[in-house]
Amino acid sequence: MKLQICKNPYIYTMFSDKTRKYRIADSKQEFLDQFGGENKVVEKFLFGEVIFVRENEQIYAFKNKCPHQGAKLNGCWLEEKKVVCPVHQYKFDVENGRGQGLYLENYPLKENEDGYYLLRTYFSWFGE
Ligand code: FES
Image 1 (cartoon, protein in one colour):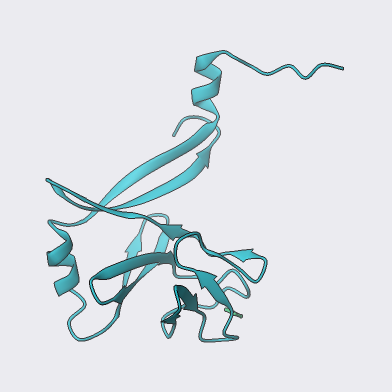
Image 2 (cartoon, helix red, strand yellow; image 1 turned 180 degrees about the vertical axis):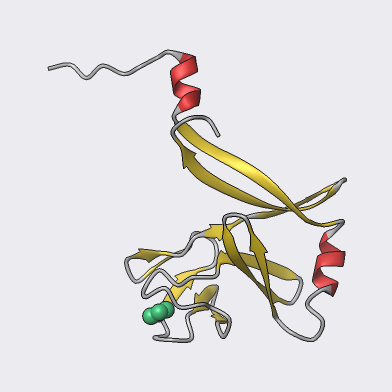
């Protein structure tokens, strides 16, 4: 049996991944200043809580909910390009969120001329 693949562009855009931008500061430097002396900042968004973890000038953003047992990552730390959950010390790659056979949702951060943004990609059935 031959597999039929829908080539209708309207249908294709209805059922696909969407990326939404969330403006978090005027610039990366302004956002870095919000850390004060800490290396973590937690912010709430409509889709949930995000923890931002800083290592020197690099900032990583993760969903503030461990995929193992759902604990908050407030006490987490970075170790060799991995974020370590404070509860059972599971480690997740800072770039792709993978670790221990689980996936920690992570968000790219981008700076452009009009601000500093968190990008969240999610699957959408109906284009929104
Ligand atoms: S709750 Fe995070 S490793 Fe168990």
